[in-house]
Length: 435
Image (cartoon, rainbow, N blue to C red; front, top):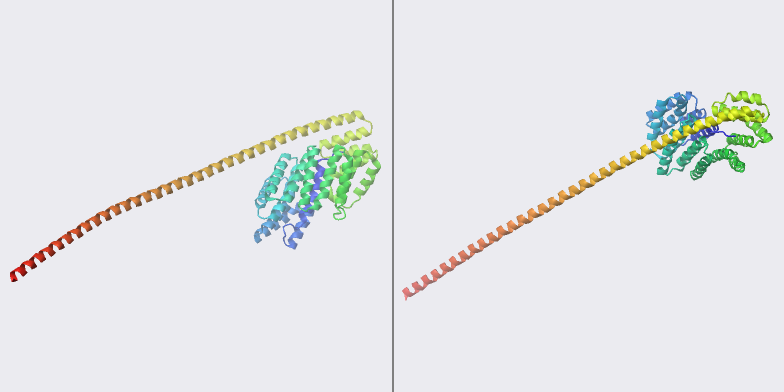
């Protein structure tokens, strides 16, 4: 039997809540207990008031970790209330704080996994895919295995919603690998159950048993995982037509005390319809099928019920309705793919434009450096030329002064020689007169 969004989201929400309840942000114990109590009932509207008081306390303490804790608590009930503007504000603020430190970045990945799961629940697949890819990009750049694990898990859920089981399994397998690298082994059984349910759709029942067994290995450490594995086995035995095995697992499941708290109304209704059909109580199963939330699930269950009762005409009509619904979903998926492609092309254009502006800026800076270098070089050369010219002028002036000084010295020497000669002639005359 094929189950898509509702079952997947049930698993995702329960596990995501348990993952976030861990005191990852290392806040005070008293505050942590308040937050954990709120996360257990994550969609309760009373969490809005609790989140507001925690946020104001974080502002008072100037502690971004406490504010991030509050925003994570506020997001689910705001989303369920369809408070779009506030949800956008919360997501934007979470993104602004994601780079503060490693702990806050990892808590951001957990919260965005919650957000993407809710986007899938609301049918906003293109938005969920864009957020998942943004998570993957941030995780790759920051080297976060936890971020990669959650982004691949979301992409796997999206592919499951689109009935692309092979792609879903591929992404779940990658999520499991990143879970091991991040040492987040508590996430593995959930991923194994998600993979098993995709193998049910493909009719590869040996793989289903294999992954159910791998998930069961964790049950001693995480008892709540038993519900998830029982759900997977219910779908397996229903798909195989094993009525006795189905009944045994169904009875264990519905009597598990965690069954109601870990599954939503539509999931429980679907399980009950399957059980009624397996017991031959077809009128009751048809009546309950009318209460299913989506046209696809109603058509799917009714055609199975009519087929079991050999009412092939009505089964054919329901099957036609199911095919028409699938065609509508296919068209929606194609439109979403085009929206994703357009968004990615726009992002690519923005990146190219940013790169172009960056290149222009770099060229401008380089040109400025070259121009400055040329100006400095010319200034140095001009200064050197001026200095050499001044030195030449100084040398010429010194040469002329030296020549003038030499000429003056020669003139003085000649005058002294002349005076000396005159003195000697005068002395000779005086000597002759004495004789």
